[in-house]
Amino acid sequence: MGICIIDYGAGNAVNVRNAFAKLGVSAEVSAEAEDWENADGLVFPGVGSFGAAMRNIGGKDAVLREAVLERRMPFLGICLGMQLLLESSEESSGVRGLGVVGGSVKRFGIGLPVPHMGWNSVEAVGNCPLFEGLDGMYAYFVHSYYCVPADSALVSAKTEYGVEFASSIWKDNLFATQFHPEKSGEKGLALLGNFIREVRK
Image (tube, rainbow, N blue to C red):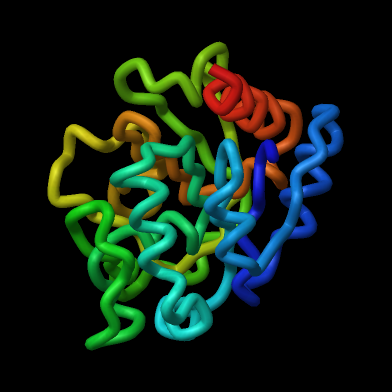
């Protein structure tokens, strides 16, 4: 089936599809769990609130966990899609995330303008294949909360905004970025190209 972009009513799926189209890849946007299960790779975008997104996903959360943890499908979370991979968020007290990554989502500190919006540097950490050939990357961010994974070894890129935070995480088949590669120019497209390569392996 190729790459499927998960549509759960949280925003920017069409923009992500258009970015893949620029790379010559026809990615399907679907809200159907059956399509997610049959994909070769999943992209999990999102803008909006943590709690509303988890409500929209509803009972399909088990399909996503299975894709990542059991079937080990190449999986890319983007912005809110990265945050939802963790266990909880200060944005929505009492709402559980997907929990495929241990840790929580914190709000930027008092005194910092939120959302953190615009271009900022992304410093790759380690040898994550998503960042191959992308030294000195600047990317586009729009977020008021940031991920704090319980295992710091999962951090594959970091960015400064009042605090140093994880702007990307990686473990095996699971990739996620706090920034929007689909809005990050040529290097953002190159990052998506690297994900395509992982899907095709």
